[in-house]
Each structure stands twice: as structure tokens, then as C-alpha cells.
Amino acid sequence: MVMNLILASHSPRRCALLKDMGYDFTVAPSNIDESKIKEKNPEKLVVELAKLKAQYVAKNHSNSIILGADTIVYFNNKIIGKPKTISEAKKC
Image (tube, rainbow, N blue to C red; front, side, top):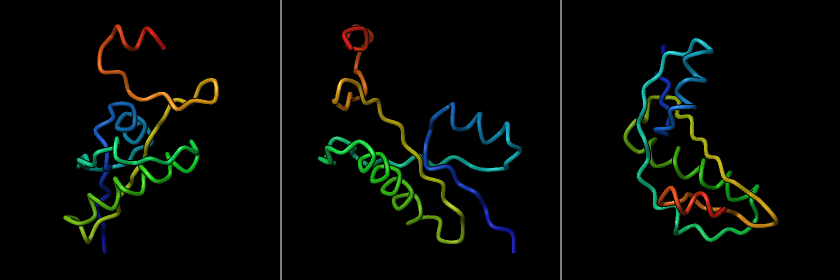
């Protein structure tokens, strides 16, 4: 039985990595609200986000392999969220 691989992310970098490794996959980004996750430990946070993304996508793809992934920035003992603007990104 052949199972479909689904990337639970719209990250261009993750797509490029999977393509470079020769994987055939589809993209099904999750729509979880990352701001609701209050975990302060960076290792636990990134695992929790990846798990939630995979679980969200798996609800509609029960016969597929779901790959959930996430990246965070941790600098000076602080988790830095995704900037909303270019000027906000430059402040970090």
C-alpha cells in the first residue's frame, strides 16, 4: 500500500528540502493559532507546534503520512515571534 506524504506547512524552505531529497508530497498547511500556545520552554514549544500542525492536517487525511514541523527563534533567553512588518523584524 502506497501512502501519501503531506507536509503540514507552507514553508518554501521545507518544500525545497523535501524536493531536494526526492520526496513526492503535497502541502496542506495547518491553520492553528500559534499565539494561543503559551509554552515558555523553546524545545517544548517547537515540538508542541509541530505536533499540533500535524494533528490538524491529519484530521482530513487519515490514510496519509503527515509531516509537521516548526521553527522558532530563541535569542538572549527569549522566544522571538514572527515579525508582522519589516521594521518590526529589524528591531530584533
